[in-house]
Length: 148
Image 1 (tube, helix red, strand yellow):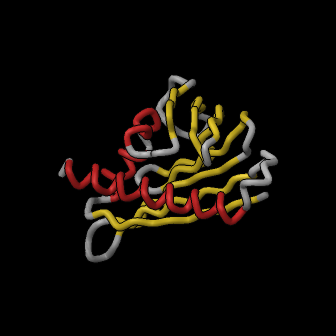
Image 2: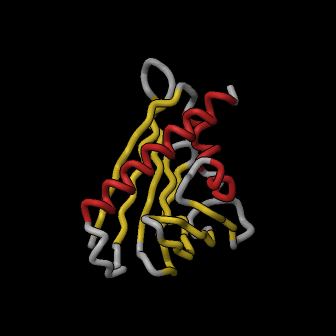
Image 3: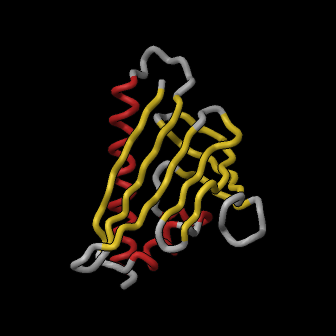
């Protein structure tokens, strides 16, 4: 089943500082409740082609995946897709400056849930991911607000 989730949060900081925090891939475990571990596999500065090994905990399942940065626009947009692992997925973060100041951070997730478990319905998975993503964005906002 194909599941898509989209959430956003307003953060009273410039897009550049938010993007720097979000694109520090190895530090995502500090604010993303789904990520258990992240390790960059390529030494270069983050950009298209950067590879990341990740361990995720989603809907009570532990998933080992490798992601590749497929799009990167400094201070604005980061997109990653899985290239190895059980559940194909894509996620992105977009920083949109707000005219009155601050930034809206938009997070999107699309995944193909392959695991056949009759107890897990699409609605349940979608709701769980939506709540998890909203929680993560609030955690990120709060962390950035503390570091002002």
